[in-house]
Image (cartoon, rainbow, N blue to C red):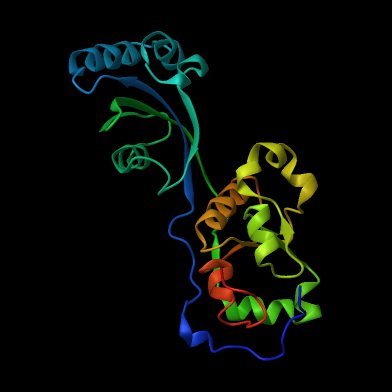
Length: 231
């Protein structure tokens, strides 16, 4: 790979302003999935829950979702990652509350188990990334992560980035804190910024406190640094 060029293309070719992601509240949810027209069954289960029945037991018995074997537990939910109707109901309910939502999958009885506030994902524009990479003082405490595929990395790469393909998430995610330092500024990159945002969301859910997603990915960055090929 050729070294960085000292010349740059104008970043105005594809402007991208830095901004914070919307919302940093996440909720831990469980659900019971019923057919969309099962209003009577939903009311029956709600009455049982009001009478003290355990949500997880009813989920195991009545839910048609694969999560039934775990008592209906779905895990931590952040905005923009699930059905909008489900999210709207879950985020409006208090911790411990039971609510309903109907989606394309059916009728959900939702229980909010817990909530937390996680670090906000920041957006890094390509010029800021260029300036960081070319300033040893700034780069010293930054870890750079590329979540593209091997073939993409071979085709076009930015020196200093560590390859962790999102497609191999199951391989490296269980011990993420041994691969990356949660206390360091972490910059995440992909081709256009979509996969890297998914990675950034995972990192903040794991306790990383300073995560930045490169806006427009390497495609956008290559318009700032002419030494990086477009593909």
